[in-house]
Length: 312
Image 1 (cartoon, rainbow, N blue to C red):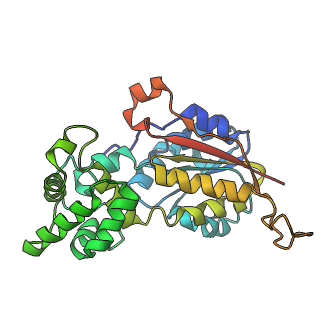
Image 2 (cartoon, rainbow, N blue to C red):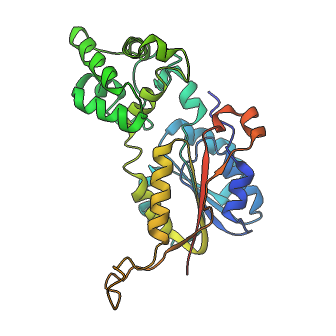
Image 3 (cartoon, rainbow, N blue to C red):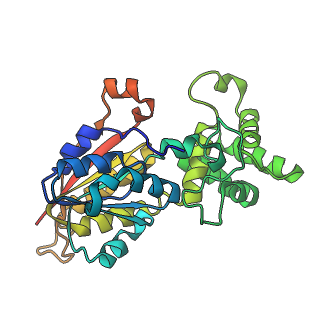
């Protein structure tokens, strides 16, 4: 399987990272190495790239693609929440730029065996890390109706979350839900026909929600971003590409908090909190994909790029 996928907002990311020859950069979501290969080209001859990915298929494909850059590349199989540990083990104290591209790689979505897609019939899986034991099938067959409702409502922002959760529980009482198409049919029955006639595929939001829950995607973001800011040199840049509103909101809120100075009430005569601004926000509003890019790569439509710079 060709794991390469078109990197989103490539030029905007390269500019946002403020690349320089000889710099050290981290791609926390290596994927198909589209962004990473360009970082290496633009930081020649001695720029260094550290790439993280928890998916062994992605890592294998990335290593093959980055082979031409030799010792300038170090790839590590790890979740980006382990960034601090990875850098310590590599004896890297500070870096010049860090990238998070939070989109699911196209090959993961398109490979039926991975169970991410509502367009292909497969065993419900959705694990980014295949060594993880907990799958989407475990989630839909074991979580309570209230838990399912909360996940589908909060992570999928699905209007019909309560009905979908109820229909899932009713169906699994008859027999376990094992495949993507079985789940799709349940969702279609739960959403009224009139509501299914417009908008995206009726299963899109629910599948997104379950994928996020299975991989604990949102809970680790704040930790990972904080580790990234700590790892940057003064003047170093952090670039985050998000693909839905929950990710973007977490990024925006964390940037705002890290950029804020003292948080003491104005009435206090002196600061007691000791908080200082850690970053400068470069993008007051997120950068979005151009019309031309969306036409060429429809998956870029919902992408948003936020950039922050580490203060001294």
